[in-house]
Amino acid sequence: MTARVIDGTAVARRVREEVGRGVAALVAAGGVAPGLATVLIGEDPASEVYVRNKRRLSVEAGMQDLHRHLPADADQATVAALVDELAADPAVSGILLQLPLPRHLDPDALIARIPAAKDVDGLTTANAGLLAQGRPGLRPCTPAGVMALLDEYEVPLSGAEAVVVGRSVLVGKPMAQLLLARNATVTVCHSRTRDLPEVCRRADVLVVAAGIPGLVGDDAVKPGATVIDVGIHRGEDGLRGDVEFDAAAEVAGAITPVPGGVGPMTIAMLLANTLTAARVQQGIGD
Ligand SMILES: NC(=O)C1=CN([C@@H]2O[C@H](COP(=O)(O)OP(=O)(O)OC[C@H]3O[C@@H](n4cnc5c(N)ncnc54)[C@H](OP(=O)(O)O)[C@@H]3O)[C@@H](O)[C@H]2O)C=CC1
Ligand SMILES: Nc1nc(=O)c2c([nH]1)NC[C@@H]1CN(c3ccc(C(=O)N[C@@H](CCC(=O)O)C(=O)O)cc3)C=[N+]21
Image (cartoon, rainbow, N blue to C red; front, side, top):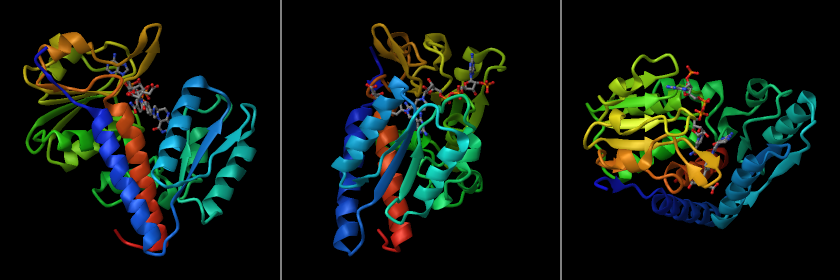
């Protein structure tokens, strides 16, 4: 293997430690420990794992765990009432509505009830609009985590060719906006893109978030490129991403593994957003 392996586990640990110090400083300055309200509806096993990790790591960083769980058959009005209650509760700094929701619920209508100031997932139209306009706001955790990895490994972005595979509201679109804000030349690919490998081969920085295991192989990687694999798939033999890791690592200059790449960063940035939200709400600066 020739590529440098980007260690998301290590970078995420450092970010969480820094958040922990920020929480301590907030409390020392007369503030209140940030409270993270994770909202889980139903019993999806993958979501249960993610939420458990988010709660555990928020407590490790000194935050209050304000988790709420509703049964899978909770109706729209019940979940809406819960979101409204958390929105009004001053102990709640951040609200994370774990997706996907059961099919009978409308996620957009529920996300719209989260106040922008408590939207630690960065999914409200207000925060998406602030990002699109390049103004300060809470950023979606996964793309923010990718940016933190690129910076930690000093990957040049200004003037670089960046290709993002995927255009979801959660990952692809905000990822493209963040790269654009750092003066990369950004191309966004999706399911109608013609000749995906050809477009990907232009990339100095390739971010893959398509949700298709092994979609990107070595034929889609420019020699020396930085490859960021956001995809996560739970198979018989463990976790894998959207990138053929072994093949791509022979061509890339640097690459994220799955697990141990972007995943841990997503949670670290959630904690960072929760601290930021608490500081703003309490009027106690950094
Ligand atoms: N590590 C982490 O922290 C996180 C990981 N994930 C993972 O990242 C992946 C993507 O998540 P998410 O963005 O929510 O997924 P979505 O399913 O919402 O979006 C997938 C995107 O990929 C595009 N796409 C699908 N097939 C192709 C293809 N053959 N060629 C090019 N583009 C394609 C789709 O295009 P179109 O719009 O045309 O349909 C769509 O824009 C998933 O594996 C998810 O589990 C997600 C969040 C956090
Ligand atoms: N409202 C909302 N916000 C999200 O941010 C959100 C969501 N819903 N729904 C699902 C996706 C997925 N996601 C991950 C978080 C952590 C890891 C993670 O920690 N992964 C570890 C492995 C963990 C394991 O072993 O399962 C790793 O890649 O090393 C992965 C994926 C957040 N998501």
